Image 1 (cartoon, rainbow, N blue to C red):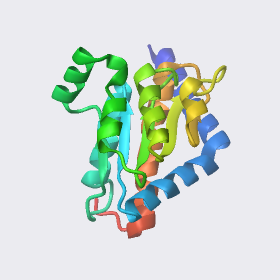
Image 2: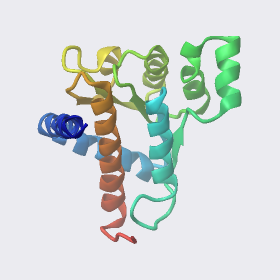
Image 3: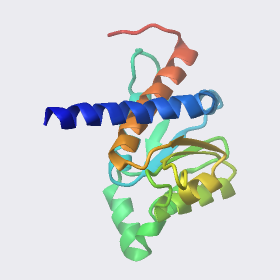
Length: 197
């Protein structure tokens, strides 16, 4: 078990290191786009499935409430939380449409869409991002993979944050780290480095 722990830790760190080596500049660009979105009175729309849905909610909470700084709330919305909307769309139309219809209803051109998909092939995330592109939003993918990095989602988006690993757990672990980095970078650039705890 100790060997398992050590190996798992090394592999998780390697996934983060590989991302940082390949995508540090892209991450800085993404943080700048999110800041510009907030400064232009737009909102951040975040969506994904399963663990990525939890990430969307986690990230939205950090922006609306706070990450490290007590400051004004920032407009971020996880499209994964309204069970009535999700189940009515899934029942009446298709699960593939659960994000696309919400983007149609809520998105404006000054908003930014962040789609999270470990594989980059989640049909509902891809369809949601297609609608975001049609409506003129900036689009960012948070994905994974080394053989087919980011899948269909990456091909659609203006900016791709890809963790170059084929291990789903390690991609997801890196995603949370990236999401926290985005929160900290945006918060610090907008409000200064005034950590409150």
